[in-house]
Length: 312
Image (cartoon, rainbow, N blue to C red; front, side, top):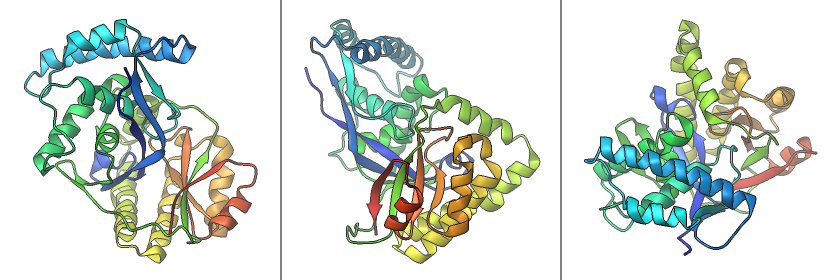
C-alpha cells in the first residue's frame, strides 16, 4: 500500500499571534512531502514512525468516543494496517516548524475518516472551520494544543488566510517572479525543536501585563500589516512591516530564538540585508527570512543553509 502524498507548509505570518486574534497566512511548501506506506521496510525510521502511529490510533479512538458528532474513523482497518507495519514515509524534517505532524494528520484523515470533507467539494466557511476543528483535535496528540492549521493546509494544498478564530478562507497569493531580487527564504538553524515547550513559554509570558500590551499594540498590528502588504503585492510595504515585526520579535521573544542566531538577527535589522522571524513556534528548526535582495542576503549569511521559498 502506498497512500497519496501530502506536502509541508510554511506559516508565513501568524505564529503564536493566531491564538491571540492576529491574522495568519499559511502556504503549502511542495519541496517536502510524506505519505502513508505499508511495505516490508525495516529501517529505524519506519519502526519509529509505526510506533508513533500506534499511540496515535489510541488517541483517535478516544477522540471519536468523546466527539462522535465531529469525526469517526475506520479504526478496524487503520489498526490492521498499523499492525502490518504501516508508517509515514516522509521527507519533511521533524521539529523544523514546517508541518511534519500536519502532513501525517492530513494523510490519516484522508485515508481513514468516515464521511470526510473532500477537496473537490464546495469548501464553504463552515466546512473549512469543521475541518480545522477536526485537525486541531487530531494534531493535539503531537503538540498538546494545535490550531489545526498545518493539517488543513497540507490536506487542501492551497494558501489559507486566517482572518480570525471563526473566519478562514482559501486565498490566492501573488504570482512568483523567479527573476525577482526580493525573496522569502528558510534559514536552517540546525536545531531540532519541540513545539509544546515554546507554546507553553508563550502562554506563560502572556501572564505579564506588559507582554500582553506588546502583543496587542505591536506584534498583532505588524503581523496583520505584513499579510495585507504581501497579499496586495506591495513589496515596499512588506519589507517595512517585516522589519518592524523582526524588531518586535527580537526584543520580546528572545527565549524562542536560538542564542547563536541573536547576533545574526540583529545584523539583518541593522544592515537591511534581510529580516528574520520565527517559523512556527520558534526554538530551533527553520527561521523565516525576508530579503529585498536575496543574493546580498545569501552573502551576508555565508556559512548558513538558505532555501529560497518565494521570489518577487
